[in-house]
Length: 110
Length: 117
Image (cartoon, rainbow over all chains, first blue to last red; front, side, top):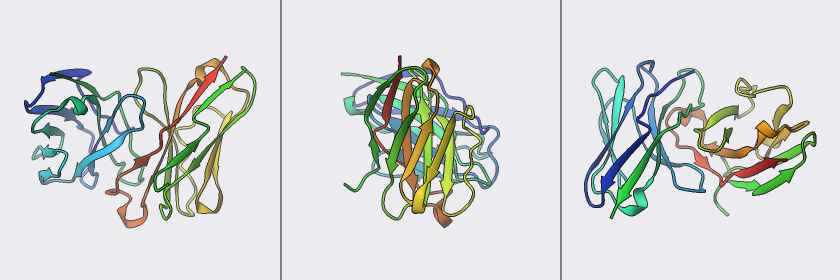
């Protein structure tokens, strides 16, 4: 299975930046890195994805290490609504499925 | 609606009974996934359908679990002779698939919460 390693939990204060790390040492050259988040009692929702270059969208930024064995999801200004479990995952090289671990529980304090 | 629809949202059953969970993906999405999430756990991959290709069933935990996708659209996950350890939220997701299968985002439904007494 395609494995990722994330801290179990992180905390942030509102309005501060948050850097959520993920290690994915078994990633292959053609695998895309995806991030999802899951709010309480909801299904996961897409956040961002990338291959090699850093990526930005309206929700977050994704910084990918040069060797692609790790990545960091950056929330530039955390809000209370960002409190969720964040999953880092990547596509298997020959199949489209995504593997999810336990993710990082982000707590945002007012 | 435009999103992934799952039914029932909640199902309580007795041990040994069979259950069927339904997923209605976003129209036009060729890829469909089933995941299971036990309390406090991450998402466990179960099965993946991509167009007319043979499904990837490698995540099904036992032969009591099966899934089918009719007409490339609606999917049904069937659990036979349910056990207490089958209690979980079963999540369905769809994705554009095809050339976007590695990049296209997954759209998840709200899940079906199964409780086996």
